[in-house]
Image (cartoon, rainbow, N blue to C red; front, side, top):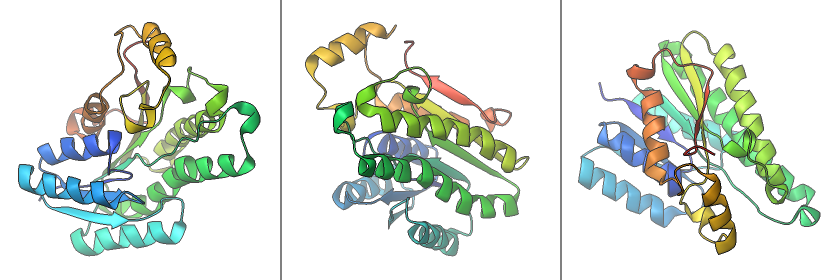
Length: 243
């Protein structure tokens, strides 16, 4: 039976690259988006035409519990299972420290951290019932050892995701493997508008002397979802080219 993967926030960036990598493996791919319907539809068409896999588009805000419950129900009603969950949906609101607001903090934590918790909570019910599942959270080195006061709420949300990963691995044992990937700098839309000086400065700190491509992160995610990673659990893997 073909496996089913749900990738949140998969209309672009790491999420899009991850959906493509799973499609290459023959997975049925659930494409979740919130605002970027056009790119989500383009991705769906591409996966179905290029890799001959079935896709399902679902608009849902991962920070909204009812929308999450409805999303999971729609997948289960159609496929009866979810084999792999990739918690990729996230936002970053970069501002100078003194301009940061409580509203910025709330929205960042709601999407990045609470969203990861909510989707994991409702998907896990079915994974535990089937006594099998893989959850991969997309964190960041910003939650480990790369810190920027201008993204202080983002950094905190990613540190929380790392801790959430450890706790969920305990909670869902022994049936679900829960791991996280922590990318460093990646060539995504989120980083397109970075000042040239900052890009050059940060590139110098990376052993590989370049930013990652989304596909390089996606391949690690797909590995963690595979049987080759069956004994990796409760782990956060840095994918940063060396920093």
